[in-house]
Length: 321
Image (tube, rainbow, N blue to C red; front, side):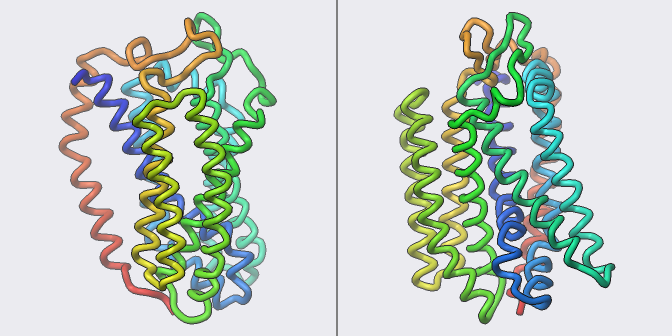
């Protein structure tokens, strides 16, 4: 297997890990005004992700760094053409992180709670918009420079992608809260998960079907089926009170959605409306020497990161009351 293919798959894995882990962080933040009906509940919701949210963001940093090193042309085109949406995501993540760190140090928490909410909702929506635009294709010139505007990115298909990821991550947050809490808070989260499951099936199903009608293959259609089965399984497990299985099933749905999007891209990394100007894994890649060195570095350090993060989740596995 060529190293360009290996690194395309590795970047897809990094984004998958980010969406699975950070997805429930976003969901908890979006659900804060709904589930956090009093200060005790809001504090419990914040505590549910407190030990892990910053570690989950490491996946985003590594995905960005890997893209820069393995596919510099892709990185340059993406971060220049999508500058404003990505800048808004960065601001939202900073605001959310500050809110989580300073909330417990302030006597007035309402402002921090609003920052947590908007800092979660914004990225949950905008990541879907960005990836929808990447899969659909954007206007690029012969030098692979983006020639559109912000309104070009805010097309109906991309906005549907944002709604799809927002509902999916919010469902992910609901099943995570049900898994991590007890009592009335858990019951409320389980009730919300049933409704959110239907919304995620509708929005996500429509988005993925439209994607497959334009770029689908047999393998990516299988991803669509796996995503639908995962969401449906999460709802069924929630109804039966199997919180662990519900979270696992929805995590499978997030994995399937991400795999479907990256599968729809291959062998492009940045499709252009004019196929002659598209960036592919070949014309956007670094030199073979660079990719070789990166492969050895990844082989050494990836297991260390996975072991540390797994240990963190194990230590903080107990439910909160």
